[in-house]
Length: 149
Length: 330
View 1 (tube, helix red, strand yellow):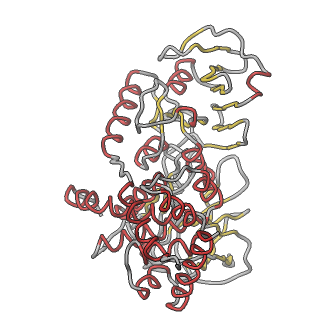
View 2 (cartoon, rainbow over the protein chains, first blue to last red):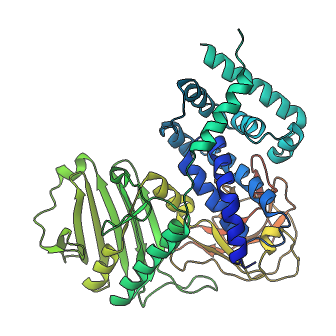
């Protein structure tokens, strides 16, 4: 499929939301930008995508997870200065979230940033509904315990 | 009072989203590529490396040799590696499968103190290396006796080929050595080098410098997995460090099973590379996919291994990618 100007424009419209989502999952703005660009390149070579926005979101979630599973990438993100937030309380929370294992980060970002229902998160993450419920419950518990230390 | 973690998370994510910066990439692409193209036209024939295109399109941190910032802002102290922005368009190049010729990359060697990229064909060799840290001070370069196009003081030597070496910083030395080509070619390669950071270096050198771009004789056939067991397949994998490097071959797809002797590596991306010590026909089984017949018969120049590659659709393949392959009896 040759991507025309209108499709590029459509991608540019989606790009900010996709970068924010990848940033929420990976904890790295720079990595998020790369991931979204990769997603675009994959979409460019893809035929028969009926809903580009949904396709791109799925690809971005999977590429973000793939990136975090790579030890070198995860280490780089861990040592990267996090985006400074507006209050110390949010900075502290963001630091805790960035330290969570990949599956918890993904589930929490999709639930509390994207506001997706658990069933849809299960579909995106390729796991059971019960697993998502458990990831969210335990993820919240981990964040709470770290913040209450 | 108990902590309302859900509310805290929502506010945190909202704040992160608000502060997320979104880079545009199209301007960067135009500037960088047009500059390289102009330089190529004015010099000995060089080929714009796939590396340039892939890195710039991917929006990675890149600084050209003349210091022009292509992805501002850049912390120059992080640019401790180099990648070729152009590769020699030598007469003696290696024919790979059904694809066009290319000067193959035969070695990537890297650690905390040095990087080496080595290209070679029968008549031409090219080594691009970086030395970092105390090792630079331990081995003095000698007085510069020439300059690169941007005025960088450089040491030119001509024993065992042509070597250009310069120190970008007191603790970073870049050396380009080439045999089988005139000095102007070596200068062209040196002028076109790109300074990159750790992330760009890692990305470019993943998968032995192959990676990410592929096409098939039937567009979409690999990504869609709608394989016709009788259809010929030509698969090309272009690498960031392999200008014009392609795995191109044709074969008949088929089904079968035999003891596994190859490796399947997903490398944390959706590109799966199947590697084998000998050429063969395999059925590859990857989680979530139908068995995929694949010829693993593209020899990697300078090595004793053979590869085949395909890409799964990251929108449909989730979770850990597990693969196995079974050789089909010949």
